[in-house]
Image (cartoon, rainbow, N blue to C red; front, side, top):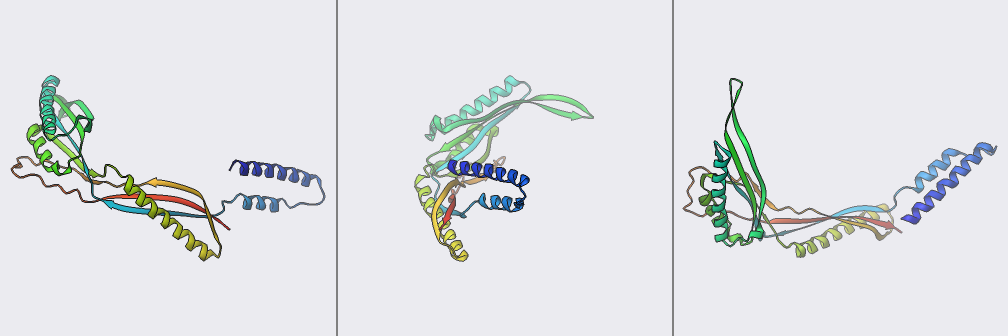
Length: 251
């Protein structure tokens, strides 16, 4: 690529010299023809294609976004309630064997709660929200864990979403990559045949990852709901997709 740029720079310099001489010569060199030749020479050569490979897999981990929310007249009171509820939720997770390394704080907020009446603002208390993301490796326990944290946190419990993923995608990506390369090559061969040219070797290859986990949002806990039966959650299938961009030379 560097050599190509050097050659192009040298060519442009030579053209400038020729154009300068043309202005002094009576030969009348056509400047438009020179510019047209430069433009043609700088075009990208080859056949450009993209290929996609997709595979499906059964998720083996669940990512649960949960937390607690407490409101009281003072910050201290709200914090005490939030701490008590979150400690109970952490105990419930520990009882199911969830490791501390799989629990990550997502955000922690303390903010005032106000009301407006006839244009008058009144401070009525403070609200504290403590949210975490939990990776659940024993996916068969997800329903029981949801029920356990709901009971542990009580009315302070909040669950915002749940998603399912494949923890180790390496083997699936190998298969998806094979499919993506085959797809790109088939497109290039067809284009070469339609154009009446001979397909050469790849001169450029780039890969992009397009993994799509199974995601459920707005996971609401209904007030007064019973926890006698275990919550039913289905992981479904996750799609692992790869896209390759390729450029083939033309022989």
